[in-house]
Figure 1: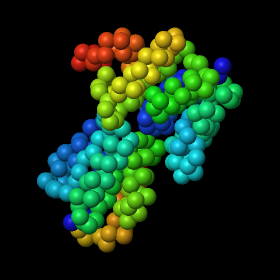
Figure 2 (figure 1 turned 90 degrees about the horizontal axis):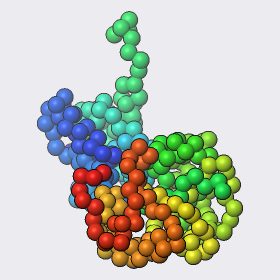
Figure 3 (figure 1 turned 180 degrees about the horizontal axis):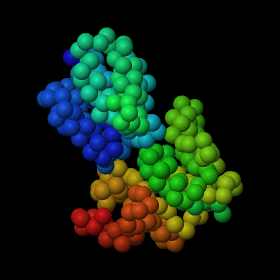
Figure 4 (figure 1 turned 180 degrees about the vertical axis):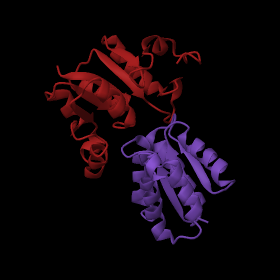
Length: 130
Length: 164
């Protein structure tokens, strides 16, 4: 199984995981990480230690937005672990797409499919086009 | 003096700074005063990518930042640590007020506020700045209460919980 690591400000990561369970049903293998109260080295180490604990199991890292301290920590991870894809701008449809596709879509295509789903999910809602 | 905000924040440029402070202060330049980042092309690119195009970013060593005339109408000057801020004063800079925006747990540090942890060395350097007349104001983002650090430094204690 491909693991997910979701890194955000505040309680967003935890709540994304909890909310996804209400839609998708129970699942495992997703780690929620907050930057709250953590120095950059502490946050970086926490993410790194989760990746290490997977012992070679593949994972996708999600981060809330480009340019924040969460994303900085994930960018540093990327230097040490170029094999770990990091996707910024996580939203609920992206997490659901990840859960839905992680066991079926080839790993190298997984980040692209998640991003496509996230982009497609952002639209002006139009009753004429439902 | 174009400096609108002098801030210590171990995260340097991040969301609170760009979306919180730089927006409210209508900053047109962020100056990062940090020897490591000034000498590291990759880190400079990382932080530059965090900033919208209308904001200029400069990376200087602590000593350069203390000595050079900073260019801009509203400049945010950032230090990563108490030691760097104190180093700027030692190199000749003087600031009336410093915003303590984020010093998270580091070795030997104790909690003063949820976003401010200080080691004994940090405390003695900050006390030295207070003795030079500097106001140390802890505040993470503009809308939150400003906390004067001076009494907390003098009494060596932790602020009672629930106050911020």
